[in-house]
Image (tube, rainbow, N blue to C red):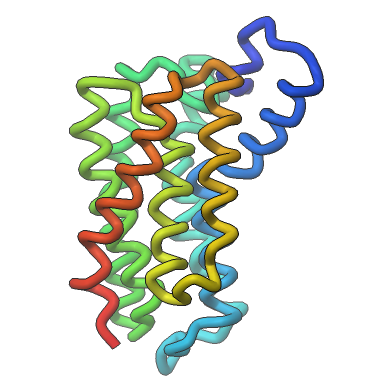
Length: 207
């Protein structure tokens, strides 16, 4: 199993650093980072059932592992790379994740965990829009995956979350340097994640 940039003849210190950033910032891992932050520092708690550790575990299963199982399976068979670089092949993977995020929203809603149900709802709406947008261009999923959750952090914590802006810039830079996206596609991915999350959160993050 290889990432898309590993199939290209890319070398040098800049490429190594870009790969380091890219490997740290795929959408599922970013979701885990935000899930951990919410678990430990939620200003509204985690509801009457979940503890920080149980929420991290649930997040890892429902919103990190399950959404990527089809990609891992396909990559092991050699039909796609781990980035699903062929953007025309991405639709089935997006459609696979949508019911997973919907189920995550339902489970967190039942458990009374507003801070995580809102995050799951945002992942559902963002993925829905990306599925449509991807029919016209290769949307940067790394960009979307850092733009959306980063915006969720801003929505919950305010400007304390300002380091997220640096993460947005680094991801845009890395995906462009690794020739996985044009600069416009990378920036567009981040902006798409930001806008859709901003449109979603007022309706689901109700405290």
